[in-house]
Amino acid sequence: MATIAAYFRYPGEAAAGPVQREYWDQKPDPYQLRPLPCEDVYLYCKKVDNSRVVREADPAARRKCVRAVVTSLAAAMFLMVLMLPDALSMIAGYQIHSLARQREGLIQERARLELEEAALLTPRRLQELARDLRLLDPDSTRIVYLSPKADSTVALNVGAKKRRASR
Image 1 (cartoon, helix red, strand yellow):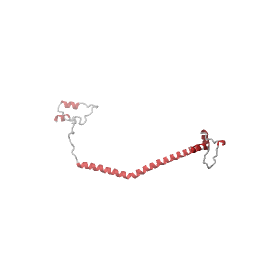
Image 2 (cartoon, one colour):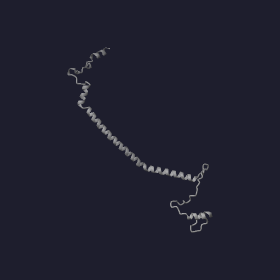
Image 3 (cartoon, one colour):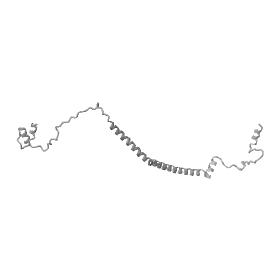
Image 4 (cartoon, helix red, strand yellow):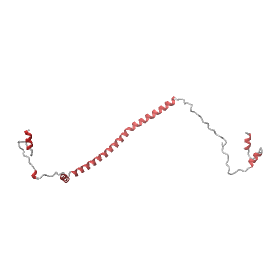
């Protein structure tokens, strides 16, 4: 260690040899960086294999973990039970709102169908349909009035009924 200390003597002290005198006589380079602290230290990282090491079971830590999990689950369930009425009322509100919208839609559809039915049942429309289907009023010459008789014959089926009776 004595040789290293000789390098770091101050310029006012007497130098031990020619190397030190040359070192202190040199003018410092203004662009040269001074040495960094611990730059001569070399760190070596050794790989440690812990695959064969088995961790010892700690029953107290396991109990603490189980207790924390159970406590948090109980707190969560308690909060859910407290929030359940509000959630159910919110869901009921959504259902009421959707039913009101559905009711409005049904009322509009009913009004549309009533308007369509009124348009289809106008007398002019019915006359057009009767004309298309040839459902016109018959001529007065083709009308046969039924006279109630005691023989219970109806219309012009007298011959057919006599034939049935003779069999």
